[in-house]
Length: 243
Ligand SMILES: *Cc1c(COP(=O)(O)O)cnc(C)c1O
Image (cartoon, rainbow, N blue to C red; front, side):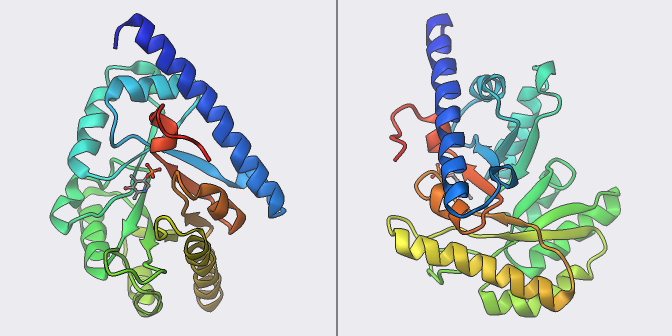
């Protein structure tokens, strides 16, 4: 980016952020929720470190990456920007057990714990490195074959064992909704909330975080109780039309 391009992109980021916050506020109002309950995670997987820096300057404070290697690359890159020392990074994508070392201790929250095996690997790494990981269980609420995560029944069965792991704190649930089908998306989000309520009541625990909602469906997710929306294209792509 040269200077003029950078200015134009910075202006886009700031303007789009205001529009997104407005959409979140409107959706929260429709549902009688406080918009302050909803936080915005800027999914930076498709952009470089300079764009992340501009997003930081536009007001974003939390970023999401879906690949461990790219996460590490971003963390190294932003070290050159002292003002971003407090930037938060979350892991949102599918994680293989042999990659947990790149993630544990490097992120504020792992959204994508999709199996007991993975939970055990994260805990084991945490024990050996003195790190307790905040995590979400990824649940495939819609039941689409292509999606990873626990089925709701598997989550019910696996929860107790995962809660017993020493270096892990389960803070809530995450899901990905079916694309291009707003009714199915709404069912996935409300199903996630219902499952959270059920698991929390059964365990006498609180699972305050519901990570759901992406560029195409975040207002619906906010209406259905989302507390973290994960937005990529609508934050970073000037050609994305915010509906
Ligand atoms: C890429 C990605 C997002 C953001 O998707 P957009 O449609 O670009 O907003 C959210 N969650 C996960 C897990 C992703 O991989």
